[in-house]
Length: 216
Image 1 (cartoon, rainbow, N blue to C red):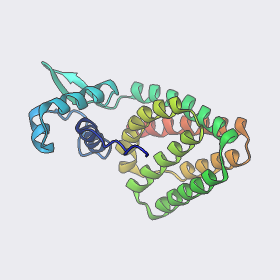
Image 2 (image 1 turned 180 degrees about the vertical axis):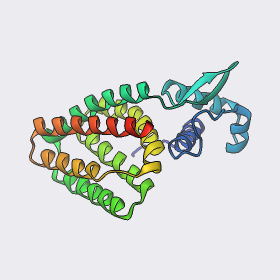
Image 3 (image 1 turned 90 degrees about the horizontal axis):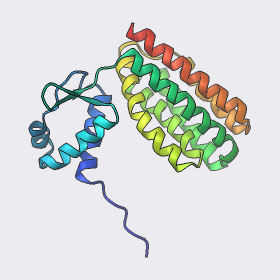
Image 4 (image 1 turned 180 degrees about the horizontal axis):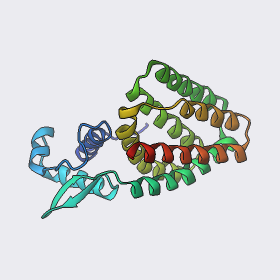
């Protein structure tokens, strides 16, 4: 008999809800996070709130301020540069591994993800564009077949999604984002690991410049 899937804990549920609020801009940089207010909002005790906030702090989404307080961390150019340096390495290695390990079933799914992203761009649906961009790169990472890479990239992508949300909601997104996705996918389809890695690294470098330019 197979084991039943484990349901998310209250800490996980609170963590995901706060991350979503930060990434979609409902909680802006500098917003204080009060444990008692969050506990009342989510209908839980303060213990899962404390645990969720600790995870958020460890992932760089919130920071300490004042006396034992926490606030949504601001976005700074240095943080963006560090984040995208990491992204270039992880995305590049994931694409190289995906080129060697991808399946026909995976290719069909990836084709659908790229098609949805292109349609979101055509419709100027910014929230859907961001979700589509994140989904494409997560799909590539999953095709790498390396569970540790998947776990590491998951933490990174929470921050990338937040950065993208802060900037792209303001000024939209250039067409090259989805053109790059198509090129990366074609390299993976052709099992060309060198090209897949190089294209993914270049994509991350272009993304970093886009974000920094938008931040002024």
